[in-house]
Image (cartoon, rainbow, N blue to C red; front, side, top):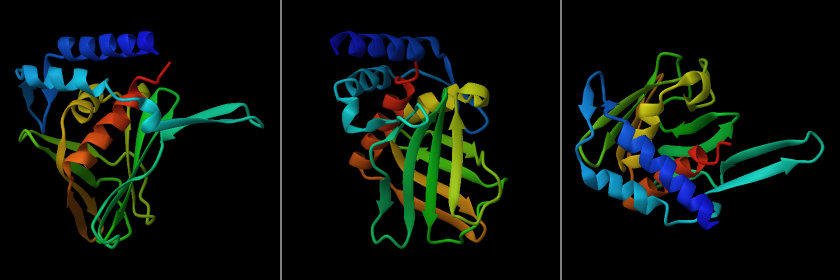
Length: 193
């Protein structure tokens, strides 16, 4: 387990050091904050078994890795998000159910994130038009977006907004929700073989 943690730390630290720019809402921003790197190191002090799980289907022989539980960002259950993260081959998939502002997500809708440090991120919906209230964002594999993934792994989300057919759903994350999101997506990233 210590060797795995050391390997993950080395990979994570290397990706941050060699990433010189982060795409941040149509402009590049240099990584200048040493505290971000220290925060990334501290993320490795947790056990990924608390955040992700792998299930093996003995009939098909296929293993599936995903978040251990859906991250619910809602006060009442009538407005907010249910976020599930999973791994498909070398692609991390965010599947975000929206509640409270229309059921349909168009192929041109976007997700906007304001991080606690004031930086921003905008991501396109990678799925097709649907009226299941589900927004999809894919990272890695054929979809790329490594710099955006690194932002989600290293910065605490303050506010997330997802566009819908009737406007948008927007929620503020608690510190714990932000940390759980970062830890889950980081564990998925480093579970890719």
